[in-house]
Image (cartoon, rainbow, N blue to C red; front, side, top):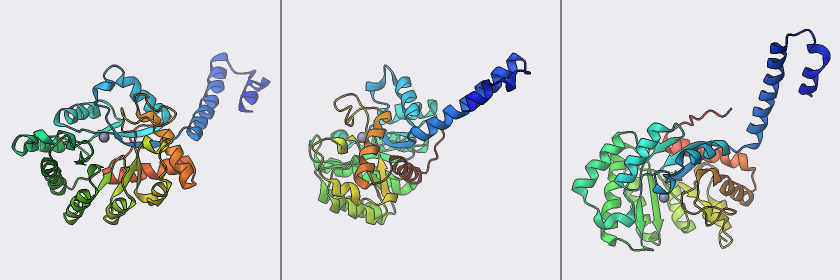
Length: 300
Ligand SMILES: [Zn+2]
C-alpha cells in the first residue's frame, strides 16, 4: 500500500534523487518490521563455539546465529585452553560472552595447584560463569573422586566470586544433589545444562533458585518425558544449542550451531502450550538474569 502511494503521481514534482530516497525508506522500515515479527529473538545459554569444529567457518556460524535471532550466545569454556579461546572470541564478537571451567570428563588430570590459578585468571578476565563443571558417571572417563575434587573446587570459586555455575550432570543424580546442596549453602546458583535427568533432581535445584536448560535432545523422537518439559517454571527455564553437539530435529546428526536453537524453542513451546516467541523471550530474560548479561546485538 505504501509502495503504491509513493509511486503514484504525487511524486511528480520531486527530483529523482529525493523520490528514490522516499521510495526506499518506507520499504526498508516495512522490511525491518516484518523481520522482527517473524524472526525469533533468543539467547543460546550454552554453546561450544571455541571448539575446533568451528575453526573453518566460525564467522559464518555467528552471522547465521544473529540472522536467526540470537541476541547473545554464551560461549562455554570447558577446559583452560577452551576457555582462553572462548575469552578471545568474546572479545572479538559482541554476540558472545564466555565462561571458564573444567569438564568432569577431564578430571583425571585435575591438578588444583596449577589449574585453579589459571582458572581464576580467566574468571577475573570477565567470565560470566564458572563451568562447565560437574559429574559424569556415564562415561566414567575420570575417577569419581577426582571429579568430586574438581567440581568442589569450582563451586568454591563460584562462591568466592559470586558467579553462577554451569553444571553438567549425567548418571550421577545422588552425588549431584549433594553438591547442589553444598553450593546452595554457599549462596551459589547455577544451571543444570542440557538437562536429561530426573524431575526430582531438577526440583531440588529449582528449590535453591537454580535454572534448568534444555537442548536439541528434546526434539528427538525418543524423548518422551514431556512432563519434565512442562514442570520447569517459566522463570527458571533456559534453552541452549550445546553446539557442535546434539543438533535438533530436523538437523539431527549434523554439526550443531546456535541458529538452530529455534527448533528447540519451537518444540518446547508446543509442549508447554505457549507461543514460541513468548518462550524465547522468557528464556532470554532468564539467561540474562542468571549470567548478569544484557543482549548487545542490535537487530535491524
Ligand atoms: Zn557443554
